[in-house]
Length: 377
Image (cartoon, rainbow, N blue to C red; front, side):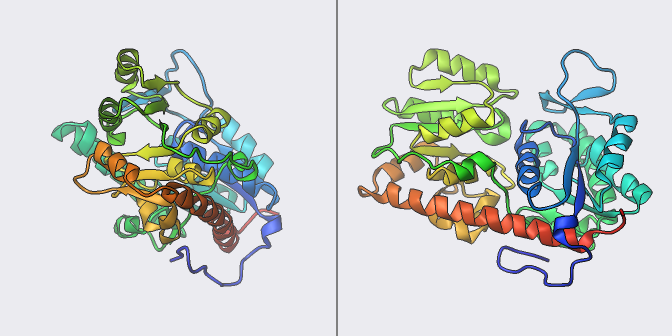
């Protein structure tokens, strides 16, 4: 397996500049963490390989008979792929490797298309859905949905030359699902987060931000409670999801809560830049991409101890932990008690570490893709 410190040094089957890669994903671009991951990755890979394309659902409104909402979050949907469109895209890309990023209809199509086009196939395991099932569903429904997801993930893992995970604790999970091997991959950044110089960090903590899915696993209640406990601090929340109405209600009642709705990446970057601290108090967080984005903008992130981002020791100097059994409000109080200059020192380390991880992640992807490439003229 690969990790942040070591890369497989075997001879690649094709030069990276000639690589042609097709990604299959059930996530809309930038709609959630997985969607943002591949949007950012592909944008950076395109300058380093011959072709990188993604086959995923298109944003549509209104009723569509071949799509249905995700259990627990009606703001996101699974859609059936248009096979004619898929074949046209693959004829254009002529992939050496296909990557399935999700265990939905698009992702499950990946291994079939890899066999048809005689190219390499790998998959990624980004979300521990079984953990989400414990949060959202009652026993019978949880058992049914978890069984379906487990079968889909097993189908992908067993057919993958390697399975990509973004924290090492998921290694045993994918091996248990039948993976031949796994590689621990970093998380890429959106180009603008890397290239644009961030503004100086405010000298004192006056604004705290959160951005992401407004859902139970993100522990939105902790943010709303912290806003009540810290009326002198401004809490800005961006995102969409099943708890949107609750956030809107609190924003109407408390002057220090500002809800800005779903944010595109440029607006998200502006929000982070104007804040002193990002919080991510999730009950479950496989990695925590938004925390890495905050670090890239020279802003420390206060993240639940259980989040996968803490497994990357290179990032530790730019992160704060919400300790087990500690409330978000208490964690903020702990940071506020730090000596002057402590937050600024962490912020400087945060940006350096995030940019280094971004470069290493691209190198990791290029190495794995080149090793698994086959087929295509």
